[in-house]
Image (tube, rainbow, N blue to C red; front, side, top):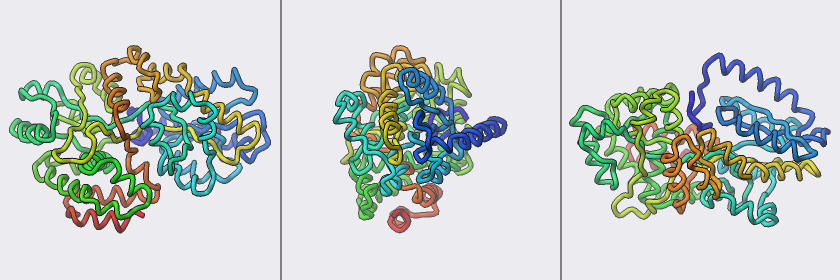
Amino acid sequence: MTMRTPRSRSILRASTLAAALLLATTSLSACGSSGPGGSDDDSIDVWVYQDASTKVQRAVVERFNKTSKVKAKLTEVPGEGYSDKMRTSMGTPNAPDVFFNWGGGSISDFVKEDMLVDLGPAFKKDPELQKAFIPSILKAGAVNNTYYGIPMRGMQPVILFYNKKVFQDAGARPPKSWDDLLGLIDTFKKKDVTPFALAGTDPWTELMWVEYLVDRYGGADVFKRIQSGDASGWDDPAVLKTAETIKQLVDRGTFGKNYKSVNYTADGASTLFAKGKAAMHLMGSWEYANQKANQPDFAKSGLGWTDFPAIPDGKGDPKNVVGNPTNYWSVNAKTKGKKRDAAIEFVKFAAKQDYSKDLISNGDVPATSDAESLLSEHENPTYARFQYDLVRAAPSFTLSWDQALSAKNTPALHTNIQKLFNGQLSPTGFVAAMKKDIK
């Protein structure tokens, strides 16, 4: 796969995966003596999710090691097993000093066990560090309003993409309102074009619709209540209204007839979209990179983008966004002494402008507040600026629910959403299932 987001680049070609697993096995076995419980005080172990963006982390490690007596050792862990390796390593001598994560639920269990360093004091000591990031993104990585992570990759909002040629052929314009969107569904059905591509075999793609609709109907606080452990949040009218809207969209033919068998990980939905079989695609910002790799002509001249529209009488701010705000560096609480000092210095060092420039060169949009001056250097400045402005203006950037909630909830979350889209759960049944299954 070629998407830039760690959560969606979960399938690697067999040869690449085999090589990556070999590399990880060697690297992980080599780092056991220098982790938090180890004796090597001259180095810190830094774990990162291995993908196309890893070269940016390699570069920052090289720069850091030229300035620090305590050296950083980078371990690249293949994405397919990253979360499992992280969870099984924490609390053992093989755990890293610094590690990549998604913030929110991906680290909440570690926070409960006091396994992470509170980075709040680092922000107080260096106020410019906190100012270096877009506030909504920095907050999205916090747990219980405490900062345990510093942004370290590009922003990944969910965007409403559209096929320019399909729109032109239909004499249509991108939707500016919910009524516009509903009207376009009917317009494209008459043209025998599926209004929205949807990878129904991968329920996290359906989750994007649920996230945006709940936000638009009820505002960001609805999910914040759920994320904080308040199960009554599922009883909010916005959740039932969202489920009812999903059913209406499915019944209206919004996703066509075959969406249940369409995938994303093998580029199924994206290919249908690029080939003009579907008019629109609600997807993470990595869709641009995916199209560039697999349908480069379409990415260059046929791909359009806009924001998710407001809903009439909705309580949510239409400027809110959902998705993966970014990824974060966190520091292991078992890392002590000068190694802890070096680990904190490393995550601060990674926020400097050279790092932002590397992300831009890699086709990403940094989560730093100074990135605006760098966007002209992006391979597609117009797209980069749209993405940056979208996030910077957002009062709230809700982390993808399957990353924000504890990992134990992910299977039930995905299953219930897929059943809703497939008609196996009624809207009221969906609400009841979520209240029962998500703890």
